[in-house]
Length: 312
Image 1 (cartoon, rainbow, N blue to C red):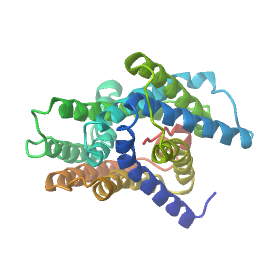
Image 2 (image 1 turned 135 degrees about the vertical axis):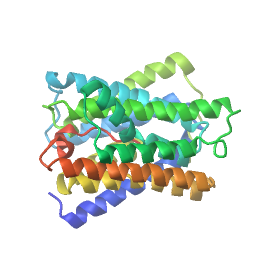
Image 3 (image 1 turned 45 degrees about the vertical axis):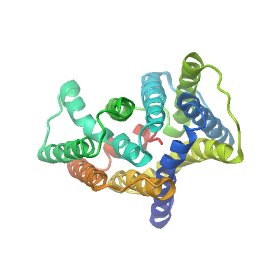
């Protein structure tokens, strides 16, 4: 168990590493077809986590009672979700992509209401209104060129990826896990990576890739660091800090992503983009605080055994 100071430092490192990865991914998909890029990061990440579990003596098959979560996370969260994110990055700004991809908690609310019959309390109502207002700002004509079909599709892919994450979030939160998350993670990444690899073979064929030192560094960053290390670190933080701290801290990722994208790629920090991020973040803050006021730390929202990969 880490000290609180160490845990907050580790959380800050994760925010920086995941935030910095948005412009890195943007550059990566310019040199490797998106599906191949997403597949390579997942397979490399899986290899690293398999190795970590082997060293710790905790390498094992998932409990058969968790196969549903294995499939939902592996297919929806990692396979479909990362495929859509990487495809979108080929036509959408990295900073904007980071903001839209982190709207997942907003879509959990209507999904939980219609599928599980959950009630919408005041905090959820306010949070949802703020979040959707932020999305509306990002999709206003001053921020988007509606004649750009590829750009519209890319933005749509990011919303669908966030919605896929919402489905997984609802599933995982209402499932009693029997496999520790770090032991489940490599199998989920392996499933997502294999699905993406065969999809890439079918859609793109075998690509011609020129491996430069910078491209190798991009792949290495995405596999061992952004995928394997960051999720291990996030799990470690979850064990050491209150759930509200980790949940609110993760909102720093799209902020860091937007800032890093502006600094490294020269993307414009428009008023609309900043306003949209502020509204979405405010909505998510209201949702998180409202949820944790209604639930004790012992309940499922703070249970590390119900964690799932938060990628990129």
